[in-house]
Length: 273
Ligand code: G
Ligand code: G
Ligand code: MN
Image 1 (tube, helix red, strand yellow):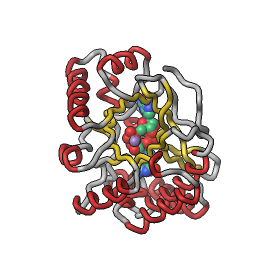
Image 2: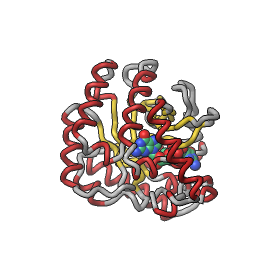
Image 3: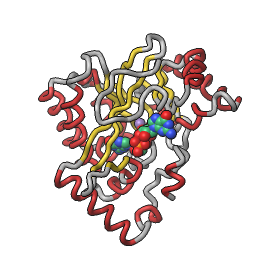
Image 4: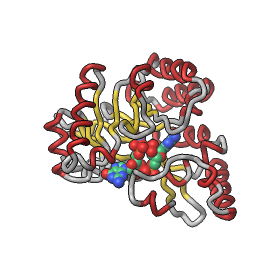
């Protein structure tokens, strides 16, 4: 299973039983890792640049959660997020992540935005949202610089509850992005019923735009849709210059991926455009 993950994004993301029962030892080790991460604050933000294609400047960074284990090894999000959600620890991890990320955000120019992935489970909790608003105020970061990314990886029980939570973020001035558009986790319901500002195109679609007609058509369709909805499009997994140029020609607004910059502990200012 891990092998499948390492190969890229077609990888599992579901917190299935199989996932958490991977092996008794593995399972226990991961639980301990998560509990300790919360206890000792072993959460670190990684930052990946998002390039504005029209100007060639880095307009934003996506903040990605990492944990540090006993040996100082860095654990990527896909290894623990589903379990953290199942264990009910995600909100505390996300809270810690925001604290650390916002501290670093001060190094970036005023106009740079920060995209955070939030679990719907955290988002629907009012005290969690209020905590974030207070934190932003304390750190002196304007809510207008924050964009929250949502996916449907985790099913929400009550969609109207999620809608209310999202409206509150928007009222405070935050932006909203639909993540993983083009995967099974990003549906028409979200697209139609949430006040989106950005759509993030699933990396696997972007990767094959030069070779597969259907993926090119999908991107073109998304661009048309984005114009209608007045939202902007971010393409993920931009790994080569040729892809970047094709996306620019197709009218995609932003690009993110290894070609531009890998996720890193520091906010990098140099990049490929
Ligand atoms: O960085 P990595 O490729 O390991 O990320 C895997 C997945 O984990 C991504 O789909 C991303 O959306 C998710 N992820 C990363 N950071 C966070 C976070 O802070 N909160 C939540 N809920 N998901 C995150
Ligand atoms: O689901 P989400 O879009 O949040 O996932 C983002 C994750 O995708 C990042 O955590 C990062 O590890 C991974 N990623 C970012 N850019 C690239 C890329 O160009 N290629 C691949 N294979 N993975 C990427
Ligand atoms: Mn994301």
